[in-house]
Length: 146
Image: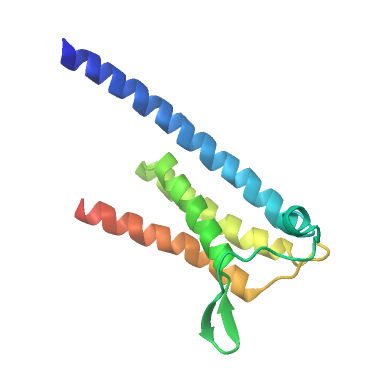
């Protein structure tokens, strides 16, 4: 009897956790798209009263003296990808999710070609892609050894 109640409670918790993860993933998508497509730095506007200043979480990753990987973009797509993987872990939805994340990471950076006050940057582009790839590798390794 106690086990039945515990199982019911566990199922209810898992159901709401799943819904919360899905809501979090979709909310994070919307926020990321708004931040990406806004023609200035929203964080700069609020934190520094200067929309031309971009918030930098950490220094960009240096590959060569001429080439950097954007740390902000890498972190953003790691977080978005992690939320997506936790929200949609099944194999059918996982493949769709990965296609979506790669498409989003490419399309959003390409939009910077046409948005005023924004520029396409290879470092941002590769930060987006590497963020998604990083989470895929973690997911595959976890599933292989779990």
